[in-house]
Structures are given as structure tokens and as C-alpha cells.
Image (tube, rainbow, N blue to C red; front, side):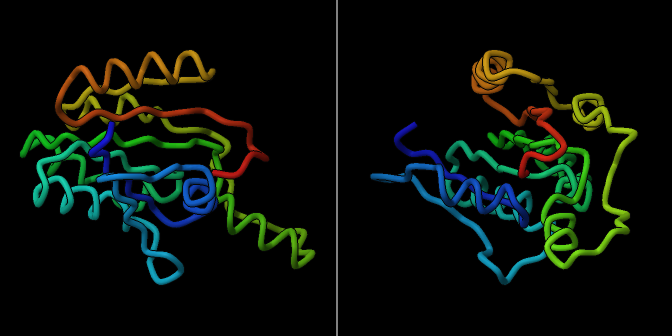
Length: 163
């Protein structure tokens, strides 16, 4: 929307969001830049929602979301209009990328077992949606927007795709 506020966590998804989101008019983009820690975005989304009353979309990687997921309870308690978008590549993508670039052959940053993020959202009392295709993501976004309150959309992406 024209009044949309976007927040991001820290990681490859943050760089992707900064590169691809088109911010104009009264829209806002809140990110920590290179100065934040994983878990920044959901707290920033909560603050922005409380301060502005506007719809917030927090773009998160799966690793960042796991750092601060309990804040979904705050979003649920205050019925904040936050859509948590989790780009799930089942790894700490930026760490893996840096390790690969440094020619390290050992890495413990993969979450190969996967997490049921929509189930976590429901455990906190908010709707959770899973998307494996662009069409599923668009449908989930429409449902999340229609809910008016907090919601989570988990978008499964390829393991080697940046999140």
C-alpha cells in the first residue's frame, strides 16, 4: 500500500529487500544496515506498528526469525498489523556464503530438518501460511492482509537461494 512500512532482519534477505523493494511516497523502509544483530526486524516492526498504527511487513530469514520469534506473542497480544515474511532457505545463508568465500569446508549453519513456521505462528495465536510458489505466496499475502492483525507467511526457497 501507499502507507506501507517495511522492516528487515539482518542477513541476505536484508540485502535482497534493500535492492528490490521500491519505496515511494509515505512508504518507509526500516533496517539496521550493517549495525544490527539478527532479530532486529520483528522488534522494529512492533515499534513501528505501535507508533504509526500502519501495516508493517517484516522481511526475515529463517535464522533471524528463530532469534526473536517469541515476539510474535507481543504482536498477537496487541493485535498489531504485522506480516512476518520468513524466507526459509533452511540455513544461515549469509554466514554460509561468507564461509564459502573464505574457502572453509566445514559449516554448521544448516537447518536441514526444517521448522514448521506456520505451526509456530498458530502456537502464538496468529494465522500462519506456507508458500512454496509465487502463486501460493500471493494467496497467503492476500489472506494475511485480509486478517487485519498479525500473520506469518513462510516462503520456502531453495537452499542455495539467498534469504
